[in-house]
Structures are given as C-alpha cells and as structure tokens.
Image 1 (spheres, one colour):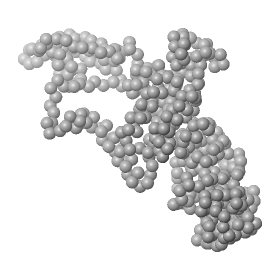
Image 2 (image 1 turned 120 degrees about the horizontal axis):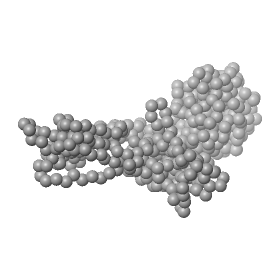
Image 3 (image 1 turned 135 degrees about the horizontal axis):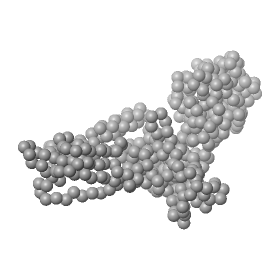
Image 4 (image 1 turned 30 degrees about the horizontal axis):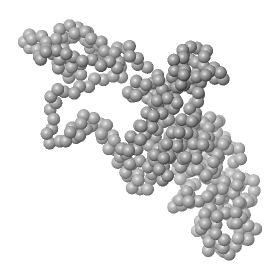
Length: 456
C-alpha cells in the first residue's frame, strides 16, 4: 500500500540547454511524495514550463535522470493547448480520454442491443472488493480495510496475474463511497439494475470502524474474536445496502444477488434472481445427490429464480451423465445451470415462450403430485389458466412414468375438463382422472418431460 512518505517521482541533477548554449535549468534535484501538492514559482522565462514538460515526458531532450515508481504516470495540462475551434469544450475533453470514451460507448451499445432483444441488463458490483490501483484505494484503503484478525493484514482476492481487489468492510466509509459509485453508474447508463457479488457478512477487526476505539493500538493479540470490543461484523450494513438498492432500482428494476458460500434469506427477499453454489461443497465427479440431499444454498427459498454455478458444482473431468444429473435437478428445483450450456438450453427448451415469473412454483418436496416410482420426481408451475407439470427421470434408463395431480391444490381454475398436452399429443382429462389415473409420459434417462394442462 502506498504511503504519504513514499517517493513516487524523483529528478536527479536535471538540466536543460537550448541551442546554441542557453541553459534554463541546471542541476535540478527534486523528490515528490505520494499525495504531495507542489507549486513551481519563478519569473517569466525562468524555465517553469520547461520543467513541467520534462516531468510530463513531452521534452525528452534534457540532462540528468528521472525516475517514476511502477504503476504511476504523469499528465500535463498545457498552458496554451492547441484546440480545434470547431469542437465544443466537452468534445475536446473527450478527445483527451478517447479510449475510455470509446469503451463506454461500446458498453452503452451492448446494453441497448440487449434490451432491444428483450434481455434485461444488470452490471456487476462487488460489495467487498476495491482494486489497489484506483485513487479511492490509495487514499482510503487502510481506513476502509477489512482486517479479519489481529495480524492487521488486509486480504487481497487474487487470481492468476492480478487480483479482483482488496477486501473492504461495509462498516466504514467504503459503504457511502460504494453507494455513490453505484448511483453514478445507474444514472449515466440505461441499465435495468445491479448484480451484487460478495453478499456475505465478514468479521473485521479494524478499530477505525468502531466508535470509541478509533485510536486503539493495533497490537498482536487484541483481535480475539470472542472478547475484543473492536471486533465487528457488517451484516446490518449489507442489509442497508440491499434495501437502498431495491429502492434505487425501483420495484420493476432488476436485482441479482450472487451468494458466496451461504444462503442469505434476508437479502434474497430483495432480489429478483439468485446466483449460488460457487464453492464451499465437494464438487460432483461420479454422481449427483438425491433431491432431498441438495445443499440449502441450492434448494433454499425456491420462489426466487436461481442460477446454480456449474464450475462450483462439477469437476472439470466429470462424465457427461453427471452433467445431465445436475441439469435435471436444476429443472426440478426451479434453478438453472449458470452459465448456461448446450445441455441446459436443450432441457429448458420446452419452457420457451413461458414467463415463469407469472407462475407459482412447488418443487418435488411440496408439489401436489405423486410420481410413479422412487427414481422419478415431479414439480409444478401453476397459475389460474395453466399448470406446467415437470416430470423428471433420475435414472439412467428410460422410464414410463404415471404422475397423479391434485388440481384442487393448485391455482388452476376449476373446470369439468382440462386439455393435457405432452409434446404434440393432446387429450382431455377430468380432475378425477388427473388425480386417480394420472398423466402417463415416457421420459428418457436423466431427462425431463413437460406436461401442459389448461382449462378446456
């Protein structure tokens, strides 16, 4: 971490001579600390502008040596810049940061084209990470840092070649900075909402975050989790952030919650979609657990649309059948493999054109259906004018499944006859026939069949 006592730029015996022999600078040696603000004073013609141009790298013809720390650069606003008089001030400013302007324009183009095709767009924010290269970290990294124990070492979430960011604690100035940044992004781009990662409360022992303990000495041994008066969690702040976000994006806005290792019921209540199962459990390599043995993070609070992260659940070399077992379990629990692959698209194809947010859902634990044997299971999407009966075969071989449905336990309107459709086959059935005889379907191994039931 850069400190105010670190020299980030230095000049050693720098001089400048204009032909034939006019020397305007001689033996200039200066060192600049991080965060320092320095003014250069001098008479007209004494070399102030020359010095600044040398520092900015605009004049390479100088004597002496210059050194700048890695990760820093120098910019300069010309005293008399040459501007295009045909352009506005804003257009001229944009020229100075054209690569960033182009990147933001491409970002807006992608958002616009997605929305034109009916795809809602939410951009990613990490609630607990700030990259060390940004100015906010350089100024406040130590103050906002999440320090998990009494070693006073901030954790950096690394990946090959770089890092996602250093861990921050929401019970600090990071909270207000984070909200202001989110608000700025939502204000300047036509996004539908937010995608939040790191939705988990973390223990922190940064004494700067606890009123009355800001000046406590950070000495090894005082970070005992059970007894330290300065130890704290940021659960309340995380809830405040999520509630603020729901109000910010509005009731029709999109809010995706990426759970990190644990289901978070209070937070999920505010979300429209959940992404879960990134890590924390053994990855599947030879088979999938029974439906009733799925982790809570997978099957918890099924009324929220849920994505189950494939790379968090499957070994890279897992056989194809394990992939199929995971996908079948996803269909039966109102979850989707994330990111979607060809197999997921194939199994979910029968739902094409169905807005599943308009249905109530009952998974195999609660669905008012009775499948034929222990190797099959069924779930139900239901509303006033339609029931979608999802029959899953958990065995490897093909099964003929007879599934009984209690229509009265669904939202489907009462009727004497219902139209029952399986693929291209359609027939009429009474409520009694559905309850007593059931719907018969042939289901391939490790696959699902969709039965559509409507009022006739």
